[in-house]
View 1 (cartoon, rainbow, N blue to C red):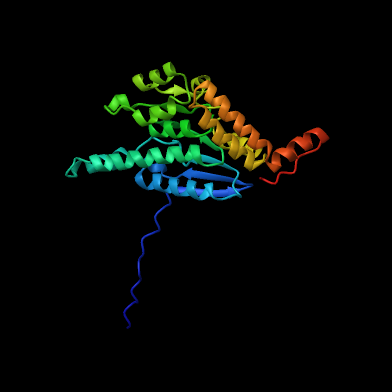
View 2: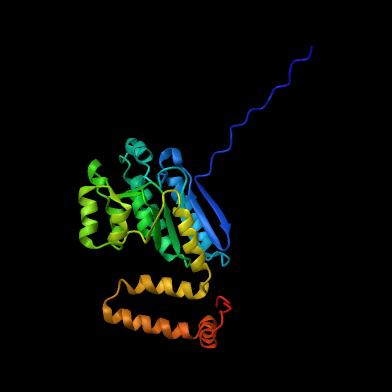
Length: 276
């Protein structure tokens, strides 16, 4: 009797930490570490950076939505991953710096990509997860979502989340979140300016998608001009901001889509965008 043939066993493919789906000119990026509360591991930060770079160069993509798998949007940095490097000769200093720099780079990429980025939040967004929401151009959250910068509870002040948070909400609101580490409701987040809209539980993505479609119907060339100008002028003093904005509008008037859009308005018809 012949011996049975040996069967090769292969490990199942590793689940992707970030998923991407494109439709109608909208790229949806889904954080996909639900069992780790979608914490921003080194691998997930690298994947986010790579996809944002790809999308920035993709003229077919007009808007980006960032959402998450599972009941938590993101719990922030992967503290287990960071703590594991305490045994390094430098007690993890170089690795901590590497991860914080990588996270900061991704947050800045969100601001710098030409396409508007919308956060779609279900569940809680804490620490660097809250930073991710604050870094997006727009944010929609479910009514039962919560936001928090809880670093003070564990002896790690949320200093990098503070950068994005303090550029979204008034100083006293930001300081209260940072100093108390309290969870805040979606209603408070909207009142403070951290999010734009509140959706019914489970419907944040639908609301974000409706917003993304509306933006995607505009000229992508003009949206690019406007997004870049917004972030540049907001860091200037008043006189410099007006001088810069006047230059931007002058150049914008020379764009083909400005000529088309103004002509369509005067002629009472829908514009035909050429995205230039």
